[in-house]
Image (cartoon, rainbow, N blue to C red; front, side, top):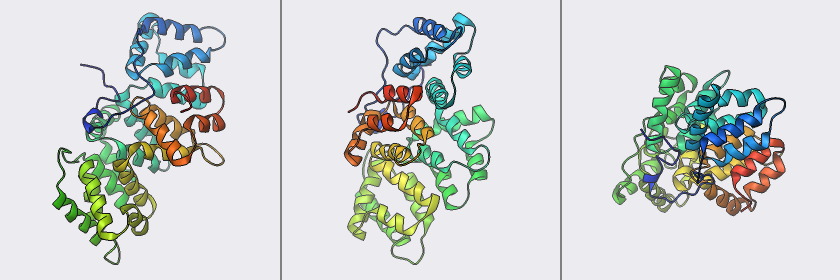
Length: 332
């Protein structure tokens, strides 16, 4: 069976994606494994070598390096790295080494563990992943945790927010092969009647449409909604909903409209002002590095007038900063 790659389930969406990480030509996993072992053996650690190799290789190539490392030295590469480095730098390197088909499942598991739930992580992953990725996510989560993701989400979330997440987990988005204009007008009116037209909001009607229709169909629904209401669907959702439900529905709309702009906003908000949410920066950059990080960089420059490279440079120092700059792939 061919190795899963982060691009594997995005090619059917009809868009051209541009990541910052690709397979390295002339790749030699044994040579890389030997270099990594040398970088960690004995006193001290050569962090530059760890960064140069692990950031520059694709996830599929990293899995081959880890396999060679175990064969050559009888050691687990990820465990050795965890014993040599710490903090956010360790988080980044272990994220890069995590098999791509398991990364989302492990991030969601972390978000659901312990006191409180990291709703922003659940929203980001479930709102942005295409149907096949959600299906794989549920399968891997079950295999790794011995229980269903839907059950865990139901036990950790509630209300309409929980229903949005459970609905997204069903991975029921329709076939995007055509647009039904009459249906789009009908759905736009249902959303309008459920929100702007009545006192109170019929959240169930809105959730059903936003979580099940295809991207092309929803784009047409958004246009029809604007024609009907005289305002964007985002404006209405901000007026009619609040809290985590508002955040989830707006994330769905943003990811339908333009995923790179959505992720550019996540990265910008994680680094603006005082303090930096390094966990979000790492999660977004690792998960999108082979998909559309170049597009995200362009979206950030367009929306905020600054570059991802310059934001990282100004906010994150040390080995983690150097590694993220390399993952970023240039100041453009």
